Length: 205
Image 1: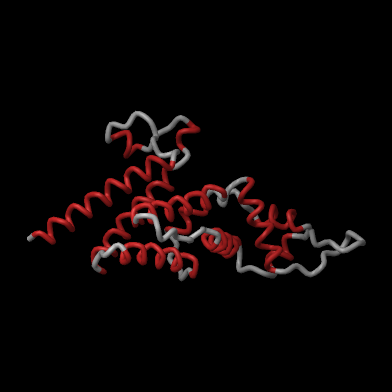
Image 2 (image 1 turned 180 degrees about the vertical axis):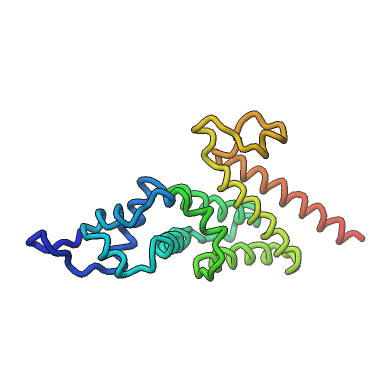
């Protein structure tokens, strides 16, 4: 809250206060439902005061997404296998994006530069390089897992509404099957096992 003691005119608002209020609004609803008016009310100011700091709602959404992506815990346990490290990173991303609905898909489909996205990508690639994968293979594995995660976020949450994505239904799925992180983790481990098997065969040639 940034009103002054008289309660009639707003006090100067920092961008940190603005972002904190926006995160609060998104956490309580979703990125899609966030409005400048709702953020202004959370800050205790008028909508024009919010627009002073922004280039519009899209700018605010991008800042929220960057902040959420920046909250992802990228700490890696060196004693864990590379598979557990990678799955742990994906799980940390899932938890952060799940807390703020709608931010994950926007983060992974953004077109502009993102320091937070670069940080996550660098961490993922470092895990794969540390596992001994050649640069080409590391990038291929990262790309495959990136696309899997985008699909995961795009269809997540359908179990609550009792629906299933048409693509999953066409494949013979009876349940959404994507609301528990364990499903995604299992798919990732299968992918990694296939890559390890392929790499082993290549070394034997």
